[in-house]
Length: 263
Image 1 (cartoon, helix red, strand yellow):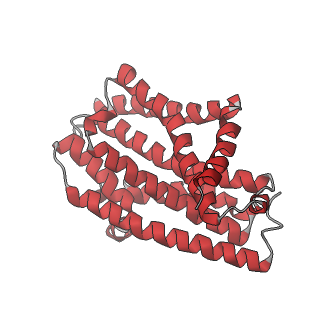
Image 2: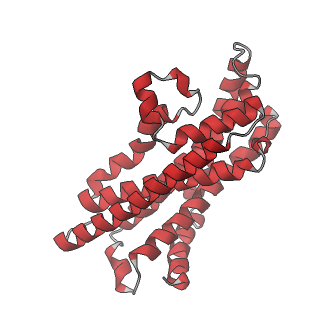
């Protein structure tokens, strides 16, 4: 695997993003609006419920974590779709580029995209609502890392579908996170779900991540089991997603459908 080739692929997407003001604005606009909206909603809930001691802090923190996950997953998908829409995916292989190098460059660029949108939103929470996500302490890093891995995993799975079924599969890219959100227990404890849904939820790393975020903020304690379980599940799903991606790529290559990818 060549760092130079990975860096070249990264620069292609990085310049595509940073040299376009509408693209940068889109990355910053939606997270900022969402965090601001949830901040005011949380202020309202805080005056009408005693469930949370710090409703604004808990809900806003979970909103920020979820937005990071959403941006990571969608960012990866968008970068892959850019290659398809521009009919450039097959052109990449004119150079001696390996599929692993393409994936690595997308993983790095997806993180940059997510941070561009997330950092302004985080900076707004302190002056507007008087809370800081840094209250999660050092474990904030592990929560973000776990979310990042799961977001990339979802991105790789959707990209596998794009390779296997073509651009018609791109609708799944937009709906994946919304489908998983109810089972992720982002804004509420898992006890709210019916028992059958709880069994499904426990198969997702999201439950352990957001349960631990609420545990830290509400109970001021750390449950390392939640963090361990999230990383274990993430590891399993990430390996499966990579295997599926390579399988889909080989199938598409054998069938010759890579040439026809694009619009």
